[in-house]
Image (cartoon, rainbow, N blue to C red):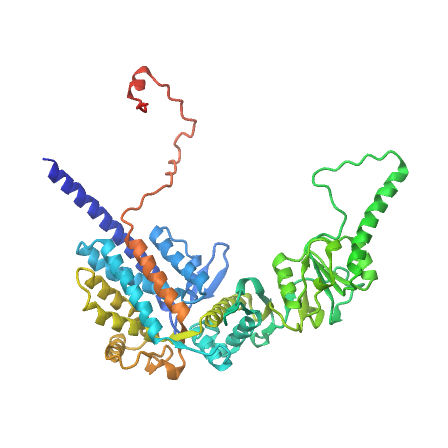
Length: 557
């Protein structure tokens, strides 16, 4: 009599798992639908209200999803995919969500037919391996030193963004900035650290065309004593410190017991001598500028200004690192450890300028800077924020190309080539995995289909024509021009995508979809809130009675 009960339990469990799968798929599709219209050059913008009441106007997938507050855990998981893509390669955040949502959408039919999620995931992973192989086959290597090619590539990658209306401006800024901070790491490879060594400084006012990459660093600080210290020095000798130029304060509470009245004067004299010695150790190297991350007392300021040295205090650690990279100085922890080699002599000009209401210090015209500042000017803060987001994407694309100089066709051509190859290969796959594998091939067509929808052309006619051209395998570079909606050769139109971005987008989307498909139950670990009006008093301690002791389970020795 036990067998029917087991079967019933099993079918109930399966039914419950299927409900969870449907809920997850619907949540993922909802997230994909939110940002589907922001893909491509003819994309829509989204206006978002953030928690503080501010307004964000953007078509950057990650920036939109970051502001959303979604309750469903699967939707939150989809948003994480976009964040992963942004952190890893900096571009392709919208494509990941659209592709991931489509992968889950095509899996819904197989869940209906009682396919086990593991089988679907195996087919998807197999499709992913073959897709990356196809990408490697159709990829084209470019010369990183050829500026025109790099400019075309970065322009085509940010052509979908708001700033594409300003022509080459953002692409130029991105290429200049990444070329400046690139460091050779041997074997012909270059390392570009955007986060550490490129600072984007937004100053409202002026025109966007006034934006530029400085051959050095700019910081939002003024010299300590403007009247006494110089604000313009040519070929300065710069010393960078990580220690305070003031008398040491006690760790906690410090008590000094003075017996004679003269001792107070002695104590003050000791403080003065201590600071004077520190300043003497610095002035021994004849610096023009002293910059410290910590405090700088009035007395030290007096000694430095007397010697004709300009000083800046309380600088951020990150800014200090950038100045060190730009002018060739070494950050010193104690003034008595200073050496001649620690002095930065690479800068050509130290100047303090007033822009708007604030003073900015420029350390520019550096000989071989390995850090730089991008100065952005614009009409409003909202405009500057959007330009900064676009610039970050452009710099990420430029960095990816420097690290891996391979390009793929844009305009959905890569996805169509992958889709056509996978469809051909699916006929040779045996067993139950064949159908999910073929469905994954069809899911890749979501990107060109969305591009066509956002252009406003006839989607079915365009997609049929594109599929026909790719099915013959005549040209893997045939795609859709996102501006006009025409079918064109991407190589001629110079619409390119970075190999790194595309490969990462495929991996993130498919692995994310597989992870959501493997979830068959959602268990809440959050305590339910007590109903209003319910007594909040402390629970009474439970007194164990004699009968309870018999129910205790003892661990056998």
